[in-house]
Image (cartoon, rainbow, N blue to C red; front, side, top):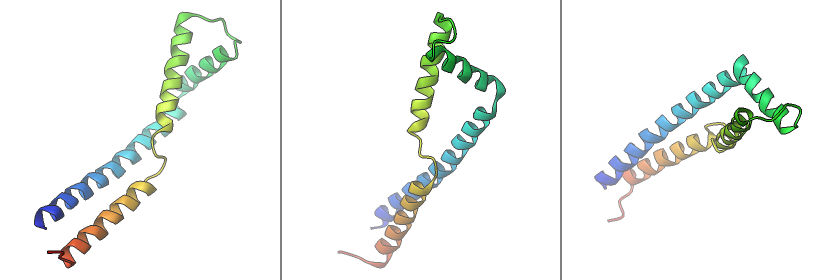
Length: 103
């Protein structure tokens, strides 16, 4: 039982770190979205896709990289709600294990 509680507490700590890391990630994403040069890159890629800009190897590569960036970003949870719910569930489980013995 004690090892189970220790493992749950370690998991709880990791989830708290994950929540903090997600907040940092989204702050960084907000900052890069506000960056003027990055906005220019997005505009060039958008124009390239609409074929309003002559195609060249650099623009094509930029467009592919920005698509990968956007797709990867879409996989990151936008808020910590899921993480907070998981953190709460772990806390409740720890308390239950402490208060109830099955053996």
